[in-house]
Image (cartoon, rainbow, N blue to C red; front, side, top):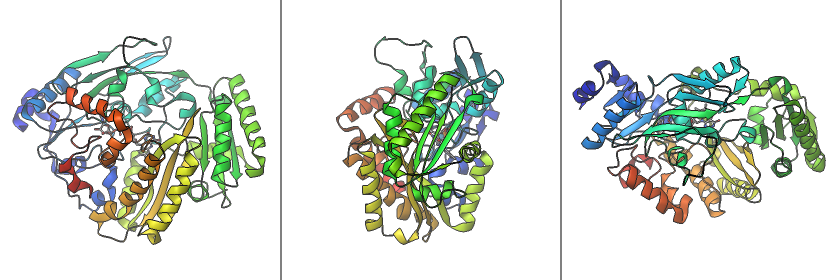
Length: 485
Ligand SMILES: Cc1cc2nc3c(=O)[nH]c(=O)nc-3n(C[C@H](O)[C@H](O)[C@H](O)COP(=O)(O)OP(=O)(O)OC[C@H]3O[C@@H](n4cnc5c(N)ncnc54)[C@H](O)[C@@H]3O)c2cc1C
């Protein structure tokens, strides 16, 4: 198999280094077990580095004929097990050499990149010319376009610019049988269903993304305005966010933090209160109008507002929010040294009315039911991506690990996630707002989609009839249960 891959590509494009294979066997979901070197999953057989869609096509067709599992990989920042391997003889197809910015077109306001271009690299190029991609997940320095599109990622300025699905104009992708599809770049069309959405969010379970064209935006950093408030409770925060959104305004950032979560983010000013914050950006007139709308919303709910925070504190906080590869590596080392897990998250979404109910139910159930509640060192959450009809909730939890390293997920994270997912689905929300389903929420994929799961299943059957694409991701598999439980 390895020899054949070396013939299809070149020997230097096929990596079987044991340490690299260990790294490729899991992502950040089991990062504690990974850093403690107790992972219980098979190593992939090889990592390959194609240089073109044509080469991806040849590798996929070979794997499809041979029945070999394939894991597409880009920036390696996945958090939900999308990169975890559950099969022997798996081939990881890495975007390393698909690394070119192909075109920045400032007249038609779009940029085309290969799937292995880090978002930060495109953003740096755009900024030189006064533009921005508008996409800014916290993993921006490391995450690459293939992964960003495959996970339906969202950035910190999403309330203005939208999620990646609002930015992708067209793309190129390769299916397991080797077929290369190009979805053309047009401003809008009504040529049947929007097939971009079969690819966006497929998490490597349907096809391999090789190229992406995204919208770009004019950047006006000189107009940025920041607003911060200490508030009485989360309900006030959610109401103020809603007020701004339903009145038709689009601040780039609109967030409400529980007091527990605020304490870890805003330790220098939170005073044990919840925090509400906004950022307005864009052309001057829009920023002014958005700022007035934010102040009007705060005035409307003034009974719940305790005090305004110096806007420079909010601005400074934003300027230091993104994680480099070093931050990611240091975090893992810290886990090894401290036997604790900080900042684990489960992100869900629902309408305005339902979000506070989910939040309260989850808090009550975890405190009442979670057997390791005494090991929790933090439990809270924040809303960070709002829409006219609802918002997300990012549940955040830290805990001391008092169990065998290989049991951490089973003992701590999974029971917490189960409560969050169950309460969300019970009240009609979505169990995953932007990290994807990966391999560890797949037991609820059918509940998430209900009768529409029929459509999702048919896509898998049609595009990946041999089931070679990222086994266990999105779609539940009995064989994978041993790695989940
Ligand atoms: C510190 C940190 C902060 C984060 N902040 C955010 C945030 O603000 N917003 C957010 O949305 N996410 C965030 N994430 C999660 C993660 O960064 C995103 O899911 C990101 O989109 C993954 O991109 P990647 O290039 O690292 O993909 P990878 O981790 O390499 O892969 C992710 C998934 O996409 C699939 N995939 C990768 N490349 C391809 C391809 N070419 N074709 C098909 N499928 C492919 C993989 O199989 C896998 O299932 C954060 C993660 C970290 C570690």
